[in-house]
Image (cartoon, rainbow, N blue to C red; front, side, top):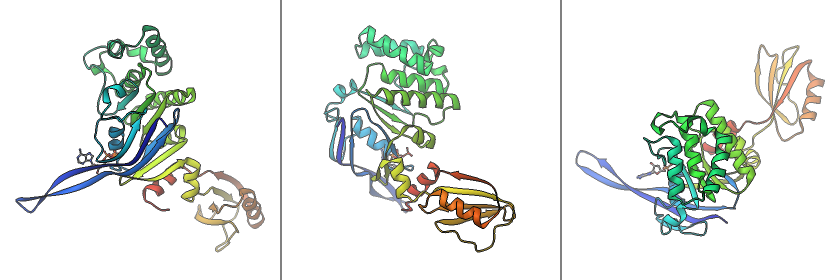
Length: 318
Ligand SMILES: Nc1ncnc2c1ncn2[C@@H]1O[C@H](COP(=O)(O)OP(=O)(O)OP(=O)(O)O)[C@@H](O)[C@H]1O
């Protein structure tokens, strides 16, 4: 395991005003007993609603915050105690904090990072070439960082985080606020990184397209606790996502008509369009029964959307 955590906790003490003069202290468990194992080369989606504890977890994994309790190892090291050693073996992109030099052209930040991490020139050149190829960072390498668009800066941040060849890359919301093209470039880049298999990636995101395109495994956290750890398919199965048939009819849907294995969820367009959710029955059987019962004009079968699953999961509709 390249990352392992057990019983990981982080409590924050916050003071709250009570009445005019009194303050009371509350303890907020931002991370409340998280167990996590990540294998080398995995791309893990670490997701959850706002305030769930994602960033706090990442900060403990990268040695920025000391856990209140629990065990954590990244690359076999205890992150806080071995922070400097760990820094050479991980890459970090946290939305709010930049690792680039604001007033220097992007290319000079890359060069400085090469010296700081003492990366052999050939390795640096090879890694940079890959980022030029996939993220197009050469187009704005001469521009001072402060003048870059958010999308350009994020592409620069990703490059900067990878130039020393980290074993693990931690990304906190890398696509938030980006324009469509930059989002696509970042996503394609991460897919390629995942396919190459030599970098472990932990990704927090609220972007459903990121989740759908990139994360084969998802750890979902809510109120500081893991509520799901597994693939997207398992999530669909567990939260009862159902395939849907939308049928256009030549005559109105007969009131009260029931088909085995399907539930009518909507009747629209003067009764000439009906939506049926499948109850685990093969679509073919329901379509055959439908064709027998009503004059069909057109029909489509839709897979459940990730939006639906995640929304239900966050509402805890198990
Ligand atoms: N330094 C701090 N002091 C007090 N409370 C904090 C601190 N940092 C985080 N919290 C609280 O801990 C909880 C978890 O916050 P965290 O930032 O980890 O959530 P998140 O899942 O990353 O949320 P988001 O998706 O909104 O970024 C929240 O209730 C937050 O208000």
